[in-house]
Image (cartoon, rainbow, N blue to C red; front, side, top):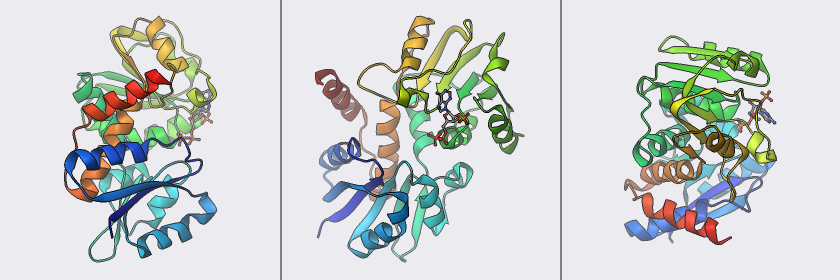
Length: 276
Ligand code: ATR
């Protein structure tokens, strides 16, 4: 029997993960299968048990299952502990389930390796203080930015999150109103606003000269935030497709011990976008 892998989520119909992992498997000559399975939160426990009892070796978990996956893991990586969310589960030889979170490293690789954006000494603004924000803070901090500001519609959530990660660098949280007069070298949109074609309220002049914008979301058309970046003269204004492929590559490495080449897969997905 082939080694089985899958992504669980709800909804899952439009997931690009099967395509990405099949491309990685072909490229690295791995014999494995990877399927998408619609799993609502209340069926997660049973679905995971069933999967690992029937030849399953590794799982990706996406919305709304990342927190549940974190609870399900027997062992957590330090970055999954910091994120309090897991997107990758791996069955170990001793039967224990290892949980990791590859979202943050996926973002950092797309920014730094694929796009040459320096994080060292950068003034970074993250919009949003939900799970997506939590998952990227530690990996960004590892690259020694000068400062990190978290702005959120519900300001108290941003303040609490910043306090949790305080100590290593200058990190603060607040409301969108507190952004006026400030400038940032990199603005990351981690709100769910793009999903409803919406944009957080951002003052003009927020982006430093040659500053960059990155939306964790992606869509066939540029998201409202990517458009905002372009209008506001961002050096680069990027969506999260590269991050999606990079987080998948890290999961693939955890499972198979081989690092796939991400660039051809990113290009393939971009071209597929252009055709739809
Ligand atoms: P995720 O796990 O994807 O981060 P989440 O935990 O529900 O999802 O968080 C969604 C984030 O997007 C929150 O920061 C939310 O702001 P609130 O904490 O004030 O709810 C933010 N968000 C969602 N829709 C938004 C919108 N239209 N404008 C601005 N922020 C929005």
